[in-house]
Image (cartoon, rainbow, N blue to C red):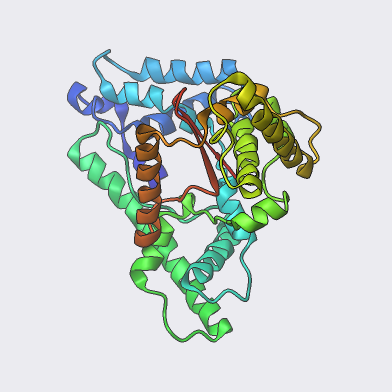
Length: 335
């Protein structure tokens, strides 16, 4: 239907006002047709020269520099040559689909997996972004996308019914949940958390510590030292530097102990590296203090995570968050 709608618009016969309100989606489709017609065997622009040629076609289609729809077409030109790809996070969800999962989520995930096998794509969300367009054209475009989304939704619903019958599940999946799942399938993710005990006992998580340590922008060195500080507290009943005073000589003993514990943490990951001495000294100098500004930031982040879990909305932080308050940086590590 989108193809027919794009072909039905005669750019040459449009007056200037109508020409300035053709949706950029249509402009890109017609420009791509023109680009393909210049040589046989063309599919999508691939290299820089071909992409520049495509943009040049779009630019030459405009009548006036004031046509905002053509600015939008140029800004979104990359959508014309990007091949359709299902995100890795969604691929992971589909790969975890099991015949034993009987919850609404996994039944729907299995239904979407079957839909992808049949159609090679995820169900269409059916929503349109804001764009410069006449009211009639925008409504028509919305109807086209909504119609296709409804068709995909009906196919998913049929798959769900078949799967529930196969699994012996009698209670139907709520229709609004099926619709919401279809609309947000592109952003679907599964998070697999590990307990603190498992994290400390076994380094077999998703963290490649050696690679992270080679990255100058990574905060993983702080993770190593903070893990060592936890071990120090378990062994001595206090945080490093909390009982030794501020003199360099007084802190030396705790620095040496903390360095040893940090080396132990690195060895559990089979990493041949040394802990950062500056970070070790900083943690000892800190002495387990709690700054109100840092605490308020971490408290706010924690409260947001609680709201996500209670409301069952938005993606949670997966595993460990490191905050560098001095440089205003944060990093999430899957350890």
